[in-house]
Image (tube, rainbow, N blue to C red; front, side, top):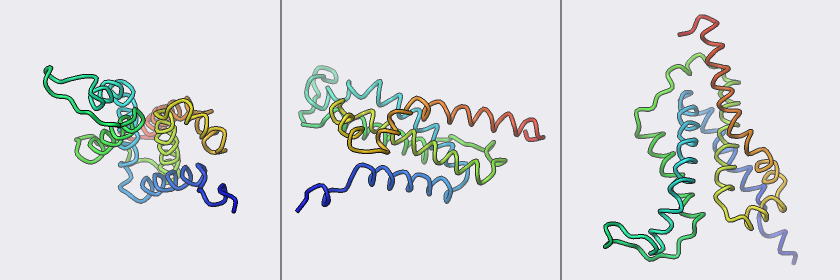
Length: 175
């Protein structure tokens, strides 16, 4: 029996994750997808900046007040992924972030925001992987390859869309 037929591909995982994020953006309160996208940006920065320090702490290489340390076998990928998820969760659900200005957006614009948010989150998660694992995903997955080849665009396009839709609303008599 061929093993590759039994193991799901990265394309399947990427597609399912993207569908979940897109559905979340379309189904939930309309302003939530913008808040989630901003939270993803903050999570990306926090995970990239603090991930190694927290990884060192969880592997016993750093201490707090020269007394507290934790010895575990957590990988840098896992630490960054959990940190990324916690930041998105806390900012999306518990913070005072609000996207009230988003009320003038059309359903199509929210769909585009949802697609861009899924690309941003998926490319961020893949970027946390060790380089050898990233290469494996890129080589074995068409969607993984597209996601990583256009990673810069996943970061820049949501910002461009926010500026464009904000300017369009102001010019059309919005706030």
